[in-house]
Image (cartoon, rainbow, N blue to C red; front, side, top):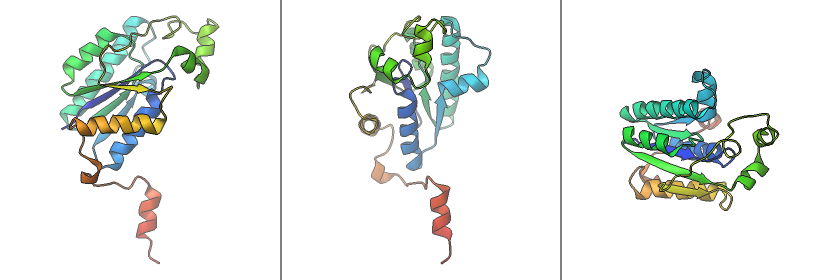
Length: 195
C-alpha cells in the first residue's frame, strides 16, 4: 500500500539530500515511487506563484493533491518542500490517508552556514523578501513521525533511521523481502555483454 513521505524544514536543512537518498533506496528495492522536489515543481508547474504566505500555501496544497493522486494509484510519493505553515501541512495530512512527516531539524545558524544556493546571504542583505527563517516564519511540526537532526546525524544515519521507521510501521517491506532493481544502465549493459 502506498503512502506519502513529506520532508519539511527550512532551506538547507537537508530535505533535498535526504529525500533523494530515501527515494533511491526505495527505488532500488523495486518499489513504485516518485520524488516531488518543491523547487522543481515550482519551476515547472507553479511559475505563477510568488513567496507570499498565501502563495506558499497554494504550492504546498498542490503538492499534497499530486501526492494524493499518486497514492491512489499505489505509487509512493516523496515530497521535499519547506512547507512552512502548520495549518497547511495539517490539511494535507487530512487528504492523504498514509502521511508520514519528516522534520529536518537544523538550527538556523547551521543552515545559514551551509547556504548552498547563496539564498541566506541574499535574504540577509535584503535582496530576497519573504525568506523563510529570516523575513518569513517557519512553524516547526509539533508531532512529526520522524525527526532527522541533520546537524547531528550523517546523511546515512538519517536515511537509515527513516527506512527503519518505514519498515517497523509496515509502510515498506523489510529489505530482504524486496526484489532489488538495477539502478544503473551500465550494470545492465555489462551483465548482458557476451564475452
